[in-house]
Amino acid sequence: MRSLPRGSILVLGSLLAAFLMSGFPYLRPNPWIALPALFSLLGTMDTLRCIQRRWSLYHGGVILCLYMDLMAISMVLFFLLYPYCPPIFPHA
Image 1 (cartoon, rainbow, N blue to C red):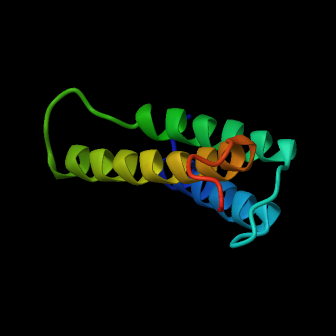
Image 2 (cartoon, rainbow, N blue to C red; image 1 turned 180 degrees about the vertical axis):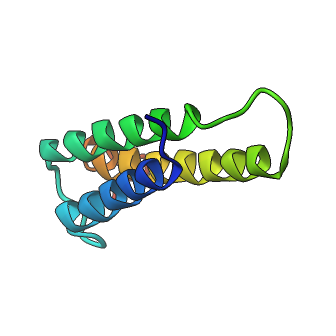
């Protein structure tokens, strides 16, 4: 069964969990952030299932929710991957 609020709540809850697990603003490596990343992808797939074939205002709203999901996924992946990246400009 399709549910637009369930997908959005799952994505936003995953973003909140990743935010708390990362220790922002002092990002530290935490491989457990992969779980919120997975749940945010599942929530995006649930939102994607709500798209209709013909354009309507509901279809436009679902597309806006998908853009919100993409921004949340990018933040979760940032929290997951950034602590493992070496610095580009090391301190002098």
